[in-house]
Length: 199
Image (cartoon, rainbow, N blue to C red; front, side):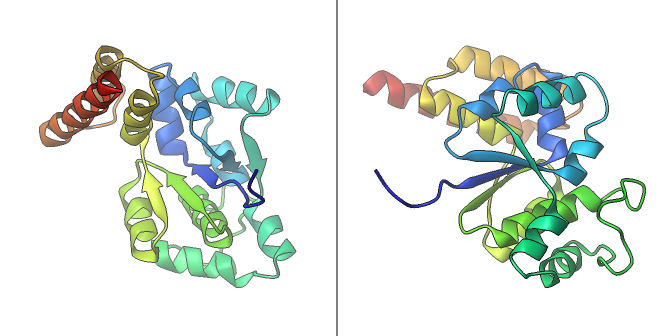
């Protein structure tokens, strides 16, 4: 057995809310890694059904909530919060209290990016374009709700038809998927299903 730490899966409100909206939060559980939601993101997930689903996942222990400020202090990296804010074009920690949910609507993204910068092997799960762009520019692996669905097909946890139904449902709950993105996702689902059939 390897002594290497498990990769950290950092879930953003955007992807979690989308998956909760289509009743597929369970797909996150199948991804290999430790699933973490920053405390600031937990506060952003305030509407149903996402709030109760996140609460149950935390209670059941398969999602852990972490405070970015505490983790940065523990690693003696208070600068990481300012770095994350700068990469997202947001006010830095000197002007924003990361523990105050009223301080800034984008604070969850700053906390999430800070945790990703502190991790050795992080994957950020988000549908938020500015956060995805920042992660990509920093070399941080990124996925989204579509990637979670496709990965479930690759693992054999979800059949291709159910995955395609999930894509339609995502669009209906406000994920705003372009026709091009839907076609690409359907192609990736078909490829993943075909690979499983070949095994």
